[in-house]
Image (cartoon, rainbow over all chains, first blue to last red; front, side, top):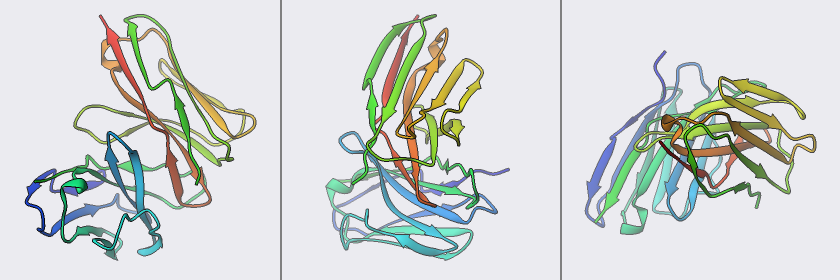
Length: 114
Length: 110
């Protein structure tokens, strides 16, 4: 089975540019998570969806960040405008929303804003 | 907010030694998960624990879900160089949310 698929794997962009990160969860999983990882703050939950509906976006740092899940097989995380402090690894993860569920991660999108 | 305190932050050990790391919290969790992350990769699930007191093994790895549901430990026996990486605990809160520990960086000296 294919795992969680993220794109791009690496992106370098200039400050002020729009960044869009994409995620395809594991087929059949109905919960999707966006995490950000930095050396200073570790793994931070930004937002999660259940059945395509955003459940908790309290981790989204500010209005420059937005996330959508238009269908069960696709989600985007957008940063507009990007800033150097947004440089981090962004992980998408998914799980099947049943008892005893475990969460599976993609390989991450490595973002550098210069 | 809820936090997971993971210790130690880093470990340097000799090949063949056993390793122990743990996570504690003031909150109760429904599920504990242990992950390993290697450079340039996403976290990969090692062990999942679903019941208080549960002890589960996966090869040389053993993990336990604390009786109070506020802690968990992971042991690695007879470490080898490929055990190098960052180990994370994660606790499930409510139905959907997972909180991650700060990670334990493990280095194994051959």
